[in-house]
Image 1 (cartoon, rainbow, N blue to C red):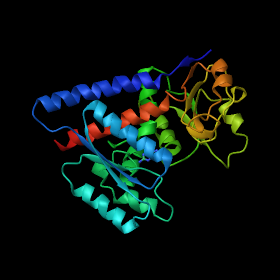
Image 2 (cartoon, protein in one colour):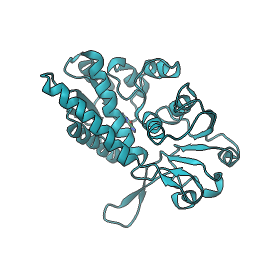
Image 3 (cartoon, rainbow, N blue to C red):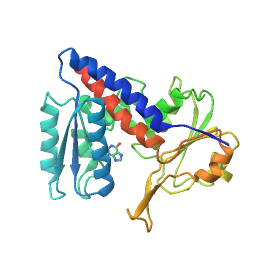
Length: 291
Ligand code: GUN
């Protein structure tokens, strides 16, 4: 029976550490860190994520600004809002919540964010610096997973880590971080994706499986080896008959995997809260780099 990697608990510890630093900053007479978020349109999940981020800012003592726009905003107008935030010395970091409306060029929008304020770590400059093992803002979800492994002292050196999914914000950066020098890190990494044949051949030999594909209950107990460490990044809204009309499901079939794994993240309460905590950490870092 696996032990739980309690992301909720660790995220609270991290937020508390951040809050202590912010308290010191403020009591020394300086202004607190300030995070801004741009939200475009009416995507329900995005609205929920952004309001959680605003709540986290309050919790750690940051100032936050939420800039909401209808999906009628043009790409040019959005780019000019980004320019304003780039130029605003009161804002230490900001994010553009993804996805942005169809028809807008996501790459162009992300590239418009000043790399020094890109606390999501999505700008190609930050991604490149991360891949080259230079100082960079790390994307929050992979950074959160690395931190969770670190705080639980999960060995990764020389281990076979299989990452399922190659998205820009999770799978791809995750695979890079797990193979980089350091602890955690130094893993032998295999990335599997929609064109991989017989994915279970890879997962069955993995010491660590990180699942980030957005397919509810995809990873089953019979696809993993005894004692594997299982990290579930998935968080899909699955419709049901309950009051909310949906519930959240991870990419891991928890009930079958918990029997065989040595460590496992729950959904909710695993990777999600770690992601949120690391955005706060990056924002504090952006602030400290400036002062
Ligand atoms: N959409 C899903 N995850 C994220 C995230 O971490 N940051 C932003 N900006 N958008 C997202």
